[in-house]
Every structure is written in structure tokens, then in C-alpha cells.
Length: 516
Image 1 (cartoon, rainbow, N blue to C red):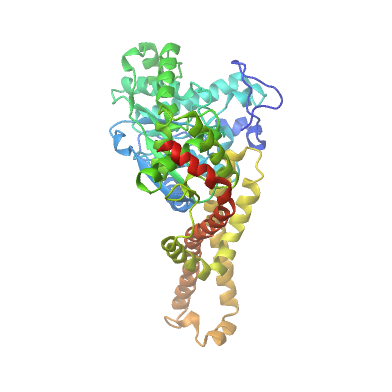
Image 2: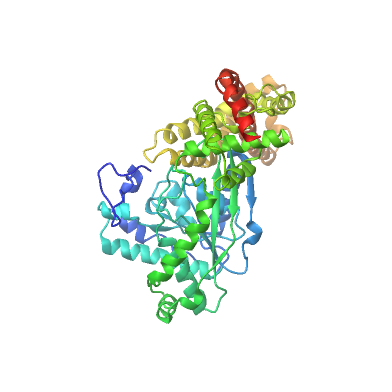
């Protein structure tokens, strides 16, 4: 989100983010009455809706990324709770990416409107999401300071209690999703929460939870079929011995109490030191594009091959401290900015590092294998996926929450749109098939409702089977659309490479000589 245009500032003197239409609407009574998480059971929320929700999230997430990689999950202890902290640049896709790759069940906290939106709010309440009022809403009059203090204290205490009982949690210390190329100022909420969790664990004689710095790496977060790498860092042990007995007893009795500020600040600084390198950690994205070009160029020079997304992130990270000549940086900046303006990047450099990649027969065959199913299913894709794509693009591309929230709408329309639209569409088609069964029988040359028999129950089974088959057909169509988008995207990139090759080839040759 962008800095406040109205000039409102927090107590640090920093501009507050502009409130979106949704975040500006606050129903305090509704927020106070959200379901509380259950700590003594396997699921903190509704078992049915959480399992079904996880299933839907997995199926949707599986197809929005072209590549998806997770590392470090084996470091996460499973005998205790944990708090994951990451930078926040991709809306709801950020917490979902952690939720689906962490080995533990989650207690969830989020912006207050997450639990009051029409459809999303229903699911958030079933997941027992605990609402949090940010300083931006408070200072702009969303509620009184006493109301915000009560609601936030209750929510943080519930999250802390859940963590102490062995659940996981993910909070984003920057406090807002953004489009910067580095961490913005880190707030203290997550650290106060996890320290309260450590105090509660101490009170109930449970293992102390850990704090896990988490890297969320998206090649271009707001684009469909982008690359993602979720990187779990080394767990940070909490200073359990520095927690006063008053805090331990307070949280044990169900009362919120602030942990000592010096402990909170020390933990915040420790997390920031470990988390900053798990972001691009550059002043501008132009520097990120520059180092991406250098990383790929060096790889091409050394081995003639390109880099995976994770390898590129690590190579760019290493360039932060690696000495590169000013001349090479200047030329790489020019190339990086030119490629970015053409929606290209370092992957598009050819194996000789003297121009952009051309036609690849092997790549063409792979893409053809992806394209054919999409063409076969095209009619059902248009009917079954068209409304979701149109709705996601319409709201996502015109949201007042910034570019970083665009993927949230795409994701939600992909999931909820399919969840509601496919059953409706299948029902309509099934009713029409039953209503006009005589005409269909004449066209098909068989009585489709009597395929397994003429009894009423057998015809009912045929009707149910048709409805189920339609759902499966739309699901397969969705998969073929996701996979089939890759060759469409690759073909467009090939044309852009041909168009822009002459603009960067000379500079690439110069860069190659400087990097040798």
C-alpha cells in the first residue's frame, strides 16, 4: 500500500498507509463476536471447514505457480509451537504459502476486515481467525483506543495461547503488504505475541515455542504462473529466562500483559538481522534487476546454463557482498532496466551471453504437450473458468489496495469462483439435460438416463453421475488452462526477445568481457 495521501502519521512520524475501502469499514460488534480458537483439540476452528479449506487452498495454490519450492521445513520443530515471520509483499498469497508448507496446524491473526467480508469472512470465522486493528485504522477513527486495545489484546493472547499449545502462527512484522524491494519498518506485535506464548508455555510447563524467519520469494508476485520459493530459516530460541513471573501468571490466568519492552526490542532486532537478507535487500528494484542479470550472465559464462528461481535468489543475495566492478554494474543496470521494461529478465540471456535466447525445439515440444490439452478443453475452459478469470482480473487490476494485493483477488476468485460457479453450472446443465432428455436421446442415439437401467433409482444415479462428471470436467479444464498458459506466455516472451535482442546484445557482450 502507498503512503498516506492525507498526511496522517504514526508516533514515529511515518506516513500511515492509505486505508482501502474494505479496511476503512469496521464493525466492532462483529469483530468482538468472532469465534475464538480451541486449543485442546487438533483444529483451532471448525474441523470440517478447516480440512475442506486446506484442500481448496492446496488445489488452487498448486496451479497458480509455475514452479514452487520449499526448503528448511525440516528445521521446524514439531514438538512445540512456532511463529513464522516474513516480509509481506503479496497479499493473502503470503500467509497461504506458509500455511500450506508448514507441518503444523495454524492459529491465524489478520487485518480486521478479513473476518467481516461477505464470503471470505465466513471462511475466516470457520478458521477462527483473530482480528487485529492496525494503527492506521485506529488513528483514522475506525474505533476508540480502548476498543482497539481490548480487541488486539484478546487476539494476541489467543494467538499466544495457541502457539504455546503447539500450534503454528504466521505474522508479518511490517504490518502491511507493500511493493518495496526491502524490509520496511518492523512493528513489535509479532514479538510481543510470541514472547507471551513463551510465557504461557512456561506457565503450563510446555516446550518453549520458537521464532522462525521465513523468506517468501516470488519472481513477480502479482502475475499468474510465477515462480515461488518458501525459505524457512533457522529457528530462533526465545529468552524464556528473561520473562518476568508477573507475565507468566497473567497469561496463565487469561489476561493480556505486555512483555518487557527491552526483551521485545532485542528479539525484534535479532529477527530483522536474519530476515533482511531473506528479501532482495536492495534500495530499488532496478538494483535487483541489475544483479539478476549479473547472476545469470555469470552462470552462462561459467557453465552455459541458466539458474532456477531459488538459485537466482541465492546468487543475487551473494552479490550483495561480492565485489563487482562499477563498469559491470552500470552496464548490467542498463540491461536489467531494458529487459524489465520489455517484461523480460536475466533468464532470457542466451548461453553465449551475447544476446537473448532464440527458438528452442525441446522447449517447443514441451509447450506443445501443454497446449494441446488446453485447446481440447477450450470450450469448457471458457464456460467454467471465464467468469472467475474475468472477475479476478476486474477486481484485482482495479483494487485500491495496491499492486501487492492483486494476486489476492486472482487467488480468491480462482478458488471461491470454482467452488460456487462449477456446482451451479453443473446443476444448470444437468437440469437442462433431464428436461430435454428426449431431444438428447435422439441426437445421441441412446437413452442416457437409462444407461445403467430403467428403474427410478438407476436413472437418479445416472443424473448424479452426469453432475459429478461435469464437476470433474471443469476441474480438468482448470488444470489444462493453468498448464496451457505456460506456452502462451513463453510464445509472447519469444516475440519480445526477438524485438528487443538488438537493444541489449551489444551491452551483453561488454558485460561478458567484464565478468570473465
